[in-house]
Amino acid sequence: MESSTSELVSSLNAYWQAFIVKLPAIALGVLILMLTLWLAGRVSQALIRPVRYLSSSPLLRSVSQRAVSLILILLALYIFLKLSGLSEFAVAIMSGTGVLGLILGFAFRDIAENMIASLLLTVQRPFRIDDVVQINSYTGVVQKVTTRATTLVDFDGNHIQIPNAVIYKGTIKNLTANPKMRGQFTLGIGYDADCQQAQRLALQLIGEHPNVLKEPEPLVLVDELGSATVNLKVYFWINVESTSVIKMASVLMRDLVELFTAQGISMPDDAREVIFPQGVPVTMVNNQEQVSDNKEPVKQSPASKPASAPKKSQAAHDDVSSENDDIRRQAEEARAPEQGANILS
Image 1 (tube, rainbow, N blue to C red):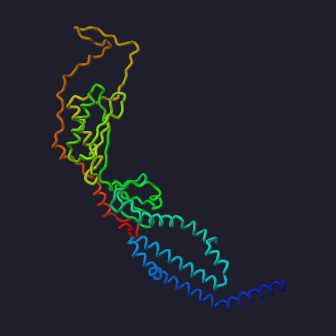
Image 2 (image 1 turned 120 degrees about the vertical axis):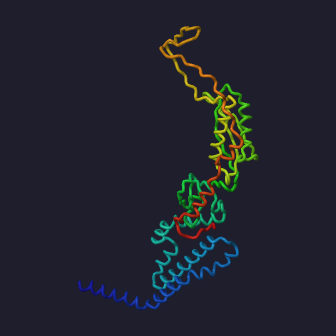
Image 3 (image 1 turned 135 degrees about the vertical axis):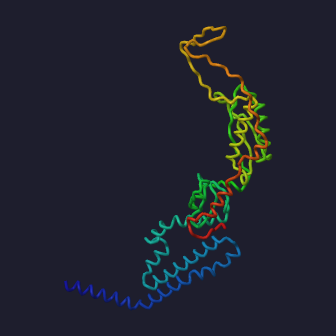
């Protein structure tokens, strides 16, 4: 028992003597580490100064400065551990095979991925601030892009934050890069109607609307043969910055229904077949047919006067304005959900 105690005391004395010997080196390592932490930002800013002449992107400068600062801090940490006598531990940290390296790798994997994706988005610029974009299943106005996420304001006024890594790997549809957008809808007419006449009337009405572009020209095509109707597919082009595609489609559908009704072009419902297994007995009353199932005969109402075709002046009173400016105004007035510099401004 006494021998083990003496061995422990001698071991502690040996460690203490080694610590006393290493104390000046440890103090020097701590001093180097503290100075590096204090000067890393300034030194990295001076080292990346040539990057400013190569690119004006604030994100590129920020990422480069952080990378240089991290390298300087890791180098200072390695020197501190080396001077403290922990050479193996220092090598493990610098090689990234240590436990700390694995923990940091898993913890900051998403952060690094989003930061690299934001850097690539800044270089490629698939969209700008205030652009209307569709990213995967989200559609809205780009309000802000930071090193972590992109903020959209959708057409319901909601703020949507999408990680930059998801954006870079996803599908981006820029709806304002080309202000021309095509709208479409389907309208069914009866089989007894003249398809060519209906197409001519529809093209004339659509072409005369002031908010429909003449180039590319609108189209009215036979799309498919339904159970009770011949379905016409209507295509038209608008300037999305001044005209709403859904409002324009609503106005054109309403005007076409009025025009077809006025021209006697039928637009029937889906066909329904009624079967009478025993037949429908009919008797003659005053030389007129009458169904003998105790139902009153159907009286034919006189043909009503066809409705007048939609007037051209009515187009001036239809609200087909685009909602893009309203959403941009809301995005400017709304509070930014995430603090940080806008890298695309």
